[in-house]
Length: 185
Image (cartoon, rainbow, N blue to C red):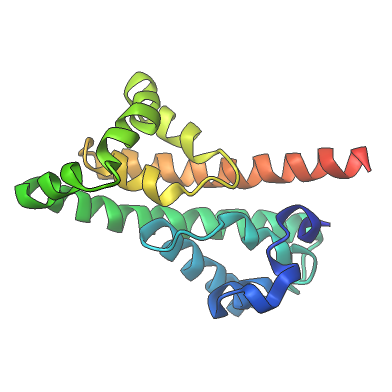
């Protein structure tokens, strides 16, 4: 069901070992793998976060598929929130390091300008709710959104809560799209 929407696990030869581990995750160890994967995609890896939904039907936690999905969403959102707090801390340190910010501004890809134009505009207008909404967009790399927002904000607790809500929301939106896509077939 979800493999068709996410599509990432069906081409296993192109997967990284970490993505392959997520696609084949089972049991409590599988949830730990999902948490680590979610942490890493918030912090450093530009990989799809939706792939964590794939093992919902085969996770073997003793729950129904719906129960497995709920466990995956909570664990993934928690992992991504912790990873984003790590990124947030780095962003706070980077604000103090002027040469890094100047290098980013002069780089070929003006990350700061692009982020302010798109993600930060939403976040400034709607605050932490804006960050959560930006993170709800499926199949869009959220690592950039997280880092862009870290440079402008200072509240760790609100930042973590917004990334948790946005990460859970993203997976719920993806499930809604999957349901709608399957209903059309």
